[in-house]
Every structure is written in C-alpha cells, then in structure tokens.
Image (cartoon, rainbow, N blue to C red; front, side):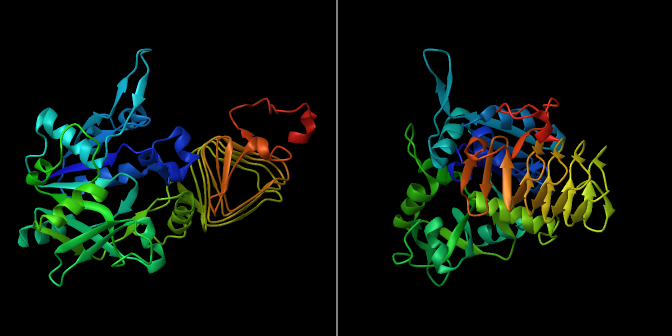
Length: 381
C-alpha cells in the first residue's frame, strides 16, 4: 500500500497563519499537522509517500526532506511554473489533477493508495479500512463521518444506498439541498484504475469532479463510516478549539511536550519563570527559552511558544502565542491566537498589530524593546 498527502492548497480560511506557513505545516503541540500523518502512516508500515506541493512548497520540503527521520520515503510533485523574471509561481492543478501529474511522470500509483488531506489529525485504523475496501471489491472508498445538518455546507456530502455504495456526491451543498449529513473526511482509498479516469493536463478536483464521475458511471465506489478521531483544521476557530482540546487532554495519543513542573504546567528547556506575584493556572505549556516576568498571569488552556516573553502585569487567557512573541506590560490577550504581526480571536476575526490603539505585543527577538512609536522606553518594561 502507498500513500498520497494532498498539500498544495493555500489554506485561505486559516489566515493569517498561512501567510507564512503552508497549511500542513501549522503546528499542533509544536509539531506540524502533516508530521502526525506521516508518523501514522509509518505505524501501519506505509513507507512510500508522495506529496503534491505548491504554495510555500519549500517549507514542507525543507522540514520533511526525503522522510528518513520518519522511517519512510517521501517524494514531492511541485505544481506551478517559473515566470520570465525567474520567479517561482505556485499554481495548483486540483487534487485529482495533482495525482494525474504524478502518475504520468513516474507511474507511482501502481498499488492500492490511501489519499489524505494534509491538514487533519486522525487515528484511523488503516488496516481495517483497507480490509473493508478489498472485501467490497471497491475501486474507491471514502471514509465518512456524520456531522450536524447545519455543518454540511462546509464539506463534501456522501449519499449512499443500503449497501454503502455511493450513488451521489455533493460538494458543499446548502443545508436545504443536502441529501445526507454524512460527509467526506478527505481520506480515500484508490485503486490504480481510478487514476486512469482523471483527464490529463487540466485542473481536476477529487471531490467536485472525480467523485461525481465515479457515482455517475456506477463504478464500485463505497463509503466507510468508521469510529475514529478526526480533527479537521478548516478554520482559525477550528485550530484554536483543537489546541484547547489537546491541552485539556481530550485528544488521545497527544501528550503535551516538555517537563511537567507543576500540576498542569509544562515547560521546555531553559525556561525562566519569575514566580513573585505570578499566577499560572493550567493546563499551560511554556516553550523553551521563554520568560515569564513577575506579576504576569497565564490562564490555561494556553500555549506559549518558544522564545516568548510575558511582561509583568500582562495577562494571557486561553490563548496561543507563536514563537518569539513578547506580550507587553499590562496587556490582556483573551482567547487569542497571536502569530507574528497578527492576532485572531476565537471567532476568526483577524487584526494586524497596527490596528490596535497601543502596542500589545512585539517580536521577542528584539532585545532592544523597540516600538513602532516614539513612546518612552519605560512603557515597555
């Protein structure tokens, strides 16, 4: 069995995180989402993995390399071109189009292949899923989940007969138009013959084009509804909630890194906490090289990225701070994600640091405590 990880999208619904990171590189407990997928595949002995990349492709390729550190082999297929100025321009060609390009280039898909979206956490029993796929003689299987009816418009909806054969596939229908509340999780099992149905040289999508074609042609196309954890990071609010759940210990097999120094408090290496007047209520992770000044308050679930600095009087409540974030004196961040120059609240509202009336945070790498304004240095201490 082989694997394909879909990683070419821009992740527009997870901005501002994806201004600087491709979506599969968004960290959960300090590790990219896609790394959990690669480890899960390796656990089941699936060691040949292709990844289609486009937007910020180099960040994925530099982190994962050829996969040796995970005990697998990883290959990449870049989607885009170089313009007349020598600039590399990403240009995704659709999830199915990306697979067709890989097949025409080197014939990778010569065995049953599991296809995964690179932006979800899963603990699916791949062995059982493959067994059911083969027992039914399926050319394609889609792993599905039941969701509330008011959520169906965010997903591809799967309509089946009593035997589980897919008769129709609706791509993100309205609640009124949806014929089912079972949705695709973005996990598929393909036989090589499926790749033959994808047209060559044109953008082509799995959900909106390939699956309706399979259903229309009446091919052996089945849904599997399985009990497993599936955490889809479809939006910033999803990401915030996922980290809250992980820190609360509600996601199996995901442990907070670092050393637990108190009940509910984990720290990385060489972390400095000045305890006088400081309040920390777990669960809280404080990354390596971070500093918490006396008089600061951190209420969990919160994640403080490595190299960050929480100034005296600052209050961080149920928030996620990416690395090297300095929260300034007497500033309160409540249910926020802070990523470089941007903040996003739990509802997904994004603001640039310049939109705040006064400085809220700065780059903790700048040891000069530089501000954008000419305000006195004392104000930052």
